[in-house]
Image (tube, rainbow, N blue to C red; front, side):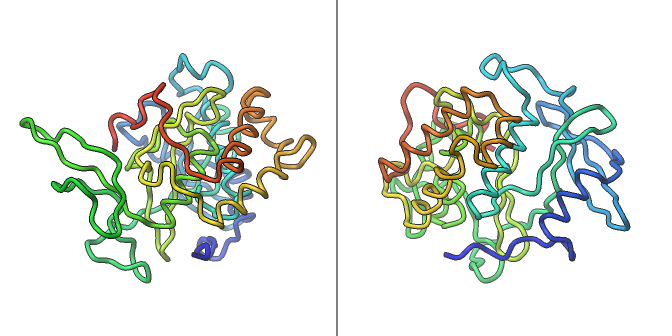
Length: 285
């Protein structure tokens, strides 16, 4: 499946959006409630252009025992850099900048479309996740596992067998995403699908936790193999991407990133849960 047409967002190119996010004036409109770290809803304006965005200041981050080095904000930017290197454009434009509360990540706000039952790929996105009472997923779905739904009952958690989700599953395996929840999947106009909230990524230890296990152990599609080949080259010492990432994650994490890419290339398969870490995030949404 070819990648959907990249943003522009109302006339701005990807590079233009990054400039806007980096150099524009941030105005805080409010706070996104329910997040474990500070997430501020803002406008950003520059040279007559204005967009909405989220600003996550480092000062508002809660310390994590298993991420003692670096910041969540820099990991979010690193995830965007890897997403761009794949050519899939799975993460909204994201930059590191100074803001009203100090250094933080600034990301274009994506207005998610509601998935509709029966919607096809030419229009809106179909439903991405579901709970079903059967023991096996139906056609077009992949099984994740059984979940308790109350009163001693269980249901099968499934996700769509959708190439957009599959690309995200590959990206998550590369960046070692420790928190791919359902609420982090944003269907957008034009058939696009974005992933957000990438603060707990790039750990040197295996931390992969996701709702997208439906392809575990299956061969990677050819397009993913090609992307991994390009990433391997882009991550060589001295390469431009490597230089940018070195400012965002630690040297050990950068080495582990290379190891994960090479491991995926060698196996040619989607990873499986390691058994050493809970494979599904909680809460799953």
